[in-house]
Image: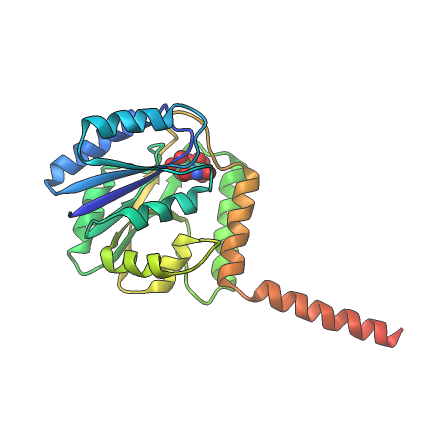
Length: 243
Ligand code: UDP
Ligand code: MG
C-alpha cells in the first residue's frame, strides 16, 4: 500500500460524498495503491451510514466507527493505528484542506522529507475571533516550548511510515499530534496553501474544545505553567513569612 488517507469525521454528512469524489480524483491521478480510512468520531447525523455505503461500493474505503465522540486528535490516532500505507495523509473532512495539494506534498517526499505539512497562507471564512485566537495561540506556544512547533499549521500533512510507527508507540493520553510530530524529528518541510471555507455543515470545534486543545498543547510541550505556579508559591510563602 503506497498511501493511506485518514479522515476524522464528526457530523460531516454534507461533506462525505464530495470529499470522496475529490480524494479519489487525486488518488487516481497519482496512480498509486491507496486506502481511504474514514474515522467516525461519534457523529449524531448520517455520517456513518454514508461511510458504510462508500465502503460497500469501493474496496479502497475502510472505516473505524468509534463508540462515542472522543475528539479530533483521538480520531486521527485511531486511523494512524489502523493504516498500513508507506505514507500517510491526515486531512479534514470538510474540504478546508484541498485534497489536490496531496500531489505536491507527496512529490516533496521524494526530495528526502519524511514530513511535509501544509502551512496556511490565509484562511477563508473563519471568524475574526478564531483567526485572532489561533494566531495568538501559535505564537505563544512557539515562544514557550523547546520543540519548535510550526505556526499556522494544522494536522493536514503527509508523513512517512517511520514517523507513523513512532507516533503509534507514544503513550500520550492528551494528544497534540502536530507537536508530537515536530518533536519526532527526521526531515520536515512544508508547502503553503490557502485554507478554504468549509464546504458544508458546521465546525465541530466550539470554543470549549479549542481551549482544551490549546491547553493540551501547552501543558504537553512546556513546563512554563508549572514554573509559574512554583514562583507564585514562593512569592506567597515569602509574603506570609513577612506578615
Ligand atoms: N472532528 C472530529 N471530532 C471532533 C471534532 C471534529 O473528528 O470532535 C473532525 C471534523 O469532522 C473535521 C476535523 O476534525 O474533519 C476538523 O474539525 P472542524 O472542521 O470541525 O474544525 P475547524 O476546521 O472548524 O477548526
Ligand atoms: Mg474545518
